[in-house]
Length: 274
Image (tube, rainbow, N blue to C red):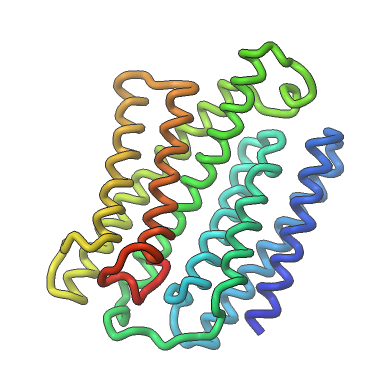
């Protein structure tokens, strides 16, 4: 049953992207409104899929790589909907929904068989640690999208191309403010995720920190975002430099989330997605 709802959610997300793309081309408010309605419906279907898998597996659906990717896409969709309700930034859905679709597509390409929970993962810290980390990843993905939009808009202004694309993107100030707010939300979540992971590691392996590749790259990612936030708050980093650093930070997130599992081996390797 979870596979049915997952596939349906993926298809609905595709329709939503088409709606956002039409809105970006035509600037018709009805297109965006319907795209948001469709995205909300896809989000509900996606949540139903996750819930059905949880019930069927008899455990939190945070273990396999398919489940991890699906959850990141789910949280990204939910966070974007919240962002849209509060700030109503134009055309951002055209940039966010492709990331949702790529993540969902990657999840669909992974084995979807329900696997048993490894002994080390039998802990109350599993849903706490995984949820916090996945939400942090989704927030950083939003910051990445906003940074890409900022660089595109900044280039339009620099080259004095104040045409259709310029009118379709939010202002530089609005994008910079949203980028900063995303970092201010994502960084504490990443910090809490690392702390809860350390507590869980002590419970599972008898040590808080072991310089496992996943732990090492999580710390590298933490330092990158700590530097970005520090420079923003104390030095006054704004604009293009902050956007570029945010994109670099998200590359570190991707390597921590994906690269470590495929290229490096450690105690986290069996629990793909953590």
